[in-house]
Image 1: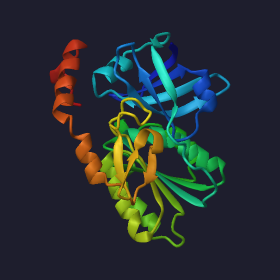
Image 2 (image 1 turned 90 degrees about the vertical axis):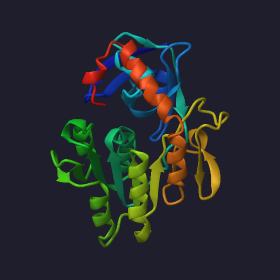
Image 3 (image 1 turned 135 degrees about the vertical axis):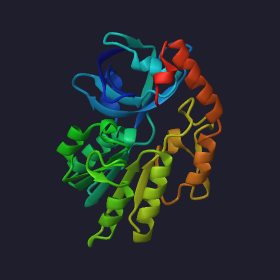
Image 4 (image 1 turned 120 degrees about the vertical axis):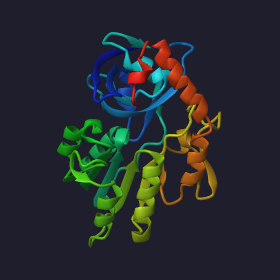
Length: 284
């Protein structure tokens, strides 16, 4: 059992949990994730480790409440316990002094970007961070990212905060500079990562993306998380979650992600009823 130490609601449907997990806190590295089960028979949920404190023995999880299990997790209080927590999983981000690293985070993707940006800064890189969201209210971890970034660029779809544009616009501007960035890292919705990779491709800026596919066991056995990278089958849970964005078949990945869309929509409706949530008032 892993006890909840602290809970914070960051926006309408985004939550932060600080969880007692000393062994994971000691071993975790940027880019890695955990898989948790709320109870013994619960769904297995993969979540990136957004931060950690090895001295306190805690890890920070940031997630969006989109289905039955994550809505249940969002209702956890301080002192509640998560039945099972497995990790750290996945291949850590390769951190070294590249020179100028551009970190692009879209929506909830800012959370897994946080430890990567931290690591890149500690390694001596100049770090430019581009953060994007639909509006100001959905922007998370801005203060934390500001303490890391040499330059912080905020983008919102509606212009309520920062620049009114997509994250690809400032990314392209940076790629057009002389010298261009040495590395780009993009984390967010699949369509955002796809277009970040397409933006950097003509400039030959090496681009890493962190994929969040359908995942069950976290060991590569189920095959649910498989993706095509450079024409070869890879498993996100063990080979990733980070891959060369210029080699990922995003169209195939997004097709696979939509395989259970109707069932997920039905479950989302059902979980609101079971949790006593007024569906008519929910705009998510």
